[in-house]
Length: 130
Image 1 (cartoon, rainbow, N blue to C red):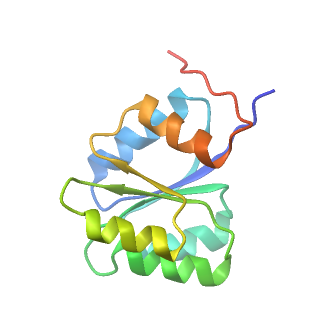
Image 2: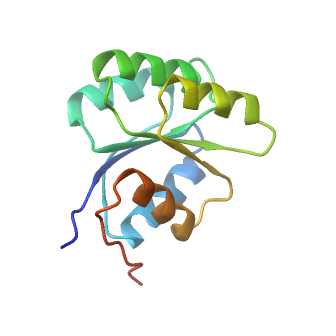
C-alpha cells in the first residue's frame, strides 16, 4: 500500500519550486503548498501541517536553517529534507544537528528525492509515474 505524503516546498527560486513540484508528483506524492522564503514557510507549515518539508538552505531574508529552527519549535517531530548546492556542507551539517532528517544536493532528480523520502518513511513504496 502506498501512502501519498503531503509536502511543502520551500525555495526562493521559482524554477526550483517548479522542478521539485514536478518531481514530487512524479513519485506519487502531493504538494500542499509552495513558499518562496523562510518566513512564509512557517505560516504555510502551520496552515497545512504537511508530512514533509523540502527546505532550501540559502534564501534571502530568512535562510533555511533559521526557518528549520522555527518550524521545529512548532513541531519538534517535523520531517525536513534540506535542499542544497555543493559548497554548503557546513550549513548542511548544522541543519542535520538541528533536526533535519536528510539533505539532497542539487540538481534534484525524482530518484534522489524518492531515496531521501524513503529514508524518512521506509514503509512507503514509491514508483516513478510517467
